[in-house]
Image (cartoon, rainbow, N blue to C red; front, top):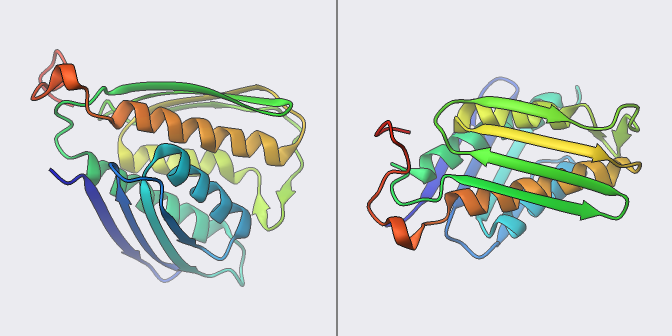
Length: 197
């Protein structure tokens, strides 16, 4: 069964298309107009082994906030759609990723209940190119709200803002990959004692 999600989201501020195949090979086609954000979405696809297409046309003449936020909302909705009924998946995933002096630890539960815990070093550089570093948490909030997952992201240490953000996306990619993969020992089984996710 194909596990593909496709979401188109259009507002007065942005027009977003997201397509994701959870059983892909990590092929990506990303264009949001925000270079560093494109780089992070590329990390998500490649390290998650998700085939990921993201096309966003946003009001960048104002700033990048709406473009990034609406893309994250559409990404979360597409991921949820691609998961389908969640039968036979592992459900839980965790991964720690170092990037030079920085470390990110990510754990996810594809629970159907949105919840985010997020910590990262204070006093980070405020910008990476045109990317506002305070948007990382907002991306995760937006993704979690639409994907309906519980997500814990912790960066206990790091100095370089680029490294701090990038290791979060890489660890998120791997944790989502592990959680969404099919468990060969649980074919046809929903991983929940409640009978619903």
